[in-house]
Image (cartoon, rainbow, N blue to C red; front, top):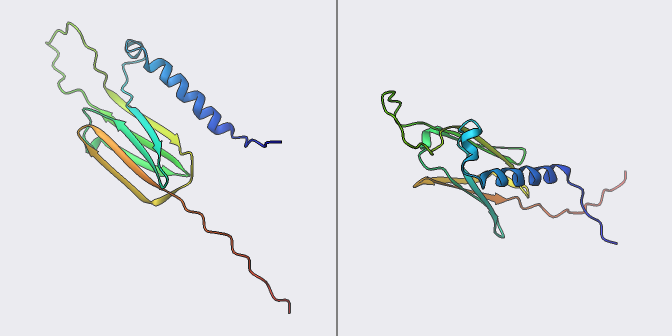
Length: 144
C-alpha cells in the first residue's frame, strides 16, 4: 500500500497556477482585466538549488522587491508608463503597465540566508539553496 502525502495548499497553488496560465494564453484578456502587468515566471530545481527566472521587461531594479518568509517567495514591483502625454492619440496600445505581486510556495525548504538574486536585461534570476537537514543523532541519556 502506498501512502500519499496530503498537501491541500500545494494543490491550491497548482490550481491557481493553472487558472493563471489559462488566462495568460489569451493576450487580449488583459485589456479587460484592468490592464495589469504580470511577469512570466519559471521555477526549476537542481540537486542543490531552486531557481526562479522572471521576465520583467521595462521595470527598473528600484521598482522591484523580493521577500522570502515561511518558505513563500514574493516578487512585487511596478512597471510604469513611460510617457503620460494626453495629446497623443494611439492607434493601438497593447503594452500593459501597473503594479504586480506574485507569490509562490517553494516545493522544498530553502536556506533563507543563502539567496542570490540578479537582474539583467529585464530578466530576474533568483537562486535559492535547498536546506540540508542535519542527520538525527541518537544520544544516550544516563539515569541518575
